[in-house]
Amino acid sequence: MPELINTVPRRDRKDGQVTISCKLRPAFCATRDVSGMLREVGLRPTRQRVVLGRLLYAQGHRHVTAEMLHEEAKNSDMMVSLATVYNSLNQFTQAGLLRELAVDGSRTWFDTNVSEHHHFLLEDDNQIIDIPDSSIAINGIDEIPEGMEIARVEVIVRLRRKTSK
Image 1 (cartoon, helix red, strand yellow):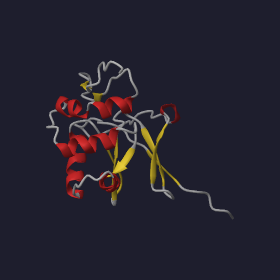
Image 2: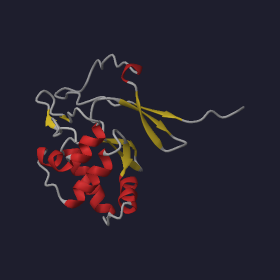
Image 3: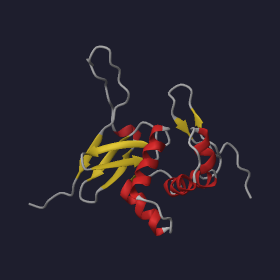
């Protein structure tokens, strides 16, 4: 069995982001030590949080809604309410393990990749995918209200299939 080195996430002291460092496949590490990951950010590793964490991180970086994760939990025979899934996703987000994407007023997505990046929203498929880092350049914002600072910049590009004319 491979040695597990640096499988527990650490909080980056510069920006407070949580990073997962592992010399194995990220999915293996996250699945292997979800309990440690939760403890590191101050969350108690309850059975439900651990199972939801494994579902979230076992497939690498991904974008999910609470409804999608709830369905995955049901399919893996974990009886958990939709409210518990929402609460866990919000707790994971507040702890820095997830990034919340408010795409529109009707649905909130959660991203396991907490680094700063932008997204495509495929409207026809109701799917979100990452935009490669080098694809978008933000030159800055000339003026922001006094006493405020930019927390982060998020760009969501909405795509739909071309209609034939």
